[in-house]
Length: 115
Length: 115
Image (cartoon, rainbow over all chains, first blue to last red):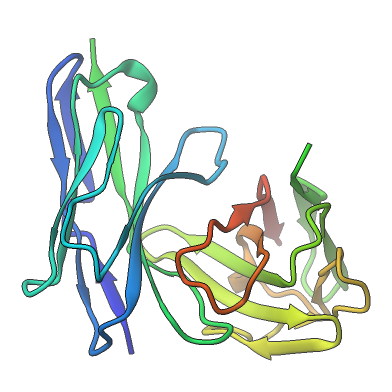
């Protein structure tokens, strides 16, 4: 079974600084996607970024970028120029290419942004 | 506006009293899914549906039922709720059931407390 591990229950960052959230996963598949979701206090699930396993280039979305290390099964999220609005729970998730398959989530990392 | 709606948003009930959480999407999506979110466990899939009248169990289906009589609706039924079903529930949908990179749209969540 696939598993996703987020080893940092909580992280803090100073406003305008950079923070990296860690995620590792376990799979024997070769075709899959990885995602980072943001969950602010409103509890809404917001897709931040996605990475296809076959693409070597790391995905980037504005201030958010990933470091995808396929061999190491690692998928970290870097947030640059942190803003107060980045404070949220962040979930790493995995989804393989299989009919009807699910998103497998990590336990989440709470990110606090200090002003 | 493309969206997934859930009702109710908050519910307090007592053990054994049947309840239904509704989920509706207006995007003509084929794939719909229910997740529950618990502290330290992230989100886990309860049930999913690949199209009308096609449903299957996820990772934690015990104590839940679903139905998919119409494409837009995917209600979650708790026939006899128990305190261990106290959780935050999310409905999600996407157009295709076998494209792992496709964006899944999440509802706003339903906070359930079973006394």
